[in-house]
Image 1 (cartoon, protein in one colour):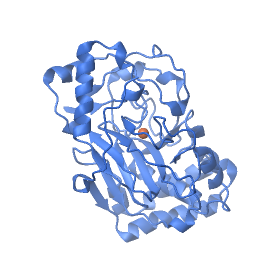
Image 2 (cartoon, rainbow, N blue to C red):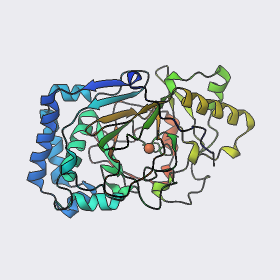
Image 3 (cartoon, rainbow, N blue to C red):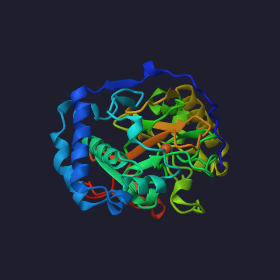
Image 4 (cartoon, helix red, strand yellow):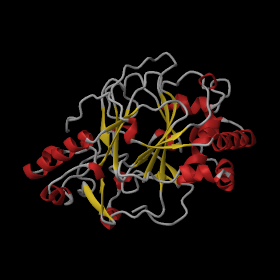
Length: 360
Ligand SMILES: [Fe+2]
């Protein structure tokens, strides 16, 4: 396993982030529509567990187009070389959240129980509506029980993991679900609570400087990337073919990068050196965004790696709480070689898929 080369950083560079303000009427409209759908469908444990309920999905698909044009416009993919956009602000209040759950299971359970968190189910629906404006939201059968909206909270016993449940360790910059050919094109992170201003780190491959030889070496398949710990453990690293770290899409660089789950020691010296240089460059161009409640971070997962600075969890019900949605863009194409990968048997839950085949 590769150790992280990214040191802790707390400097904020908000001016480098693309920011899209939401007109008040647009922000209010999506919350109101989510509320209407929540009342119509009604929170119940079965629906809240995965959100993959035909009645709920039918309402979302039938009604997201009603949302104001300003909102649809704001949810388009990031438009700058930084590959990330902060969108805000959506209406929510701390008082309506109830305590931050201790793990994803509790979060899913509480969403179906209005006595625990009056707003969670409605906020899940709001996230799905926003993600549907951007593309096709999907989940993973093997992650958080296949739920279409994931809850990211610090979890006791997982402090040092390389996963969203960790806290006291630095979450190394990574492509989300880098191991899989059907990984998201966009990642949407919605902030419900972040009292200690914990930073999310983002680094764009389009801002790094690489020598032609390094670029060429990283564009040749060398090593696999294994599934992260949120999918379980013990995956054999011979399961799928090696993948390319860098690729080209319409003349611009894309990347697939997760050093914590890449068996770098198995590579030759030249590859390791190029990979290390890429990691250093990603650190150099890193931007830290400390999201505030009601803000969304839209990340281009083909261009940007993301991570999180270490923080001390509180475990008192007031911890950082994000909601995360994976989004597929049906118009995006990936390298044809990826279609031969089996993704370690991990399957998507993709009820909004509009076209057949994989996202490759
Ligand atoms: Fe991640």
